[in-house]
Image 1 (cartoon, rainbow, N blue to C red):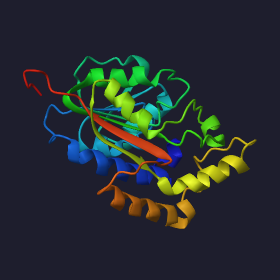
Image 2: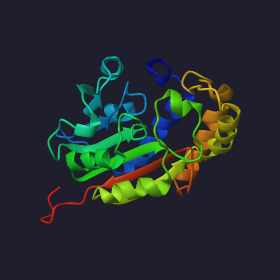
Image 3: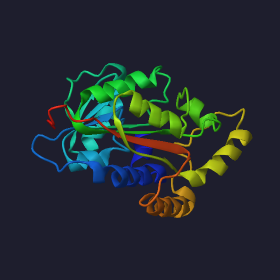
Length: 242
């Protein structure tokens, strides 16, 4: 995954997608700005945030942490379990979490999102991106130790239950839903991961389609997708402090 993170078309497209969706809602970077890439692995999907400002990357895997700080100067690595974050309340201006809540090691996704809401500053953002399509379970999910996929409604609910105001919710990679459904049938008895497979995205075709979808997402939200995204903002305190 470390090797694929810098060159696989999906990781490249996801970096661009998240930057496009989240950046308009971020406050201007200041000397005190600090972000959290929760369960960020090697930084494959959150490096755009580290390029913007100082970013703590929490992960439990030492190999991933080493790769992140080696490849991206903006990262500060912390070995941590996102179920019990080792950070004080109101520490971060934004929290990013990509494809971690689905994992078997995180048995209570809502409790993890509650942790994100705790450590983000009032007025700060929490962005979640997870596998979508609850009926699209396939071999890739088994190999990556997945435990669940999420509907867009579930993503919205987790944000709101955590006490965050919903800023944006949308499906993404909607064009991958039909082929994923077919692969789920074809590979029913075979556990194969998408990581390291078809890194070029059919010679660049999938990357181009993802770019077209991002153009659409600038204007509208999609009701479904192979990924689902929810962005929440922590309300300001009663006294209006940021």
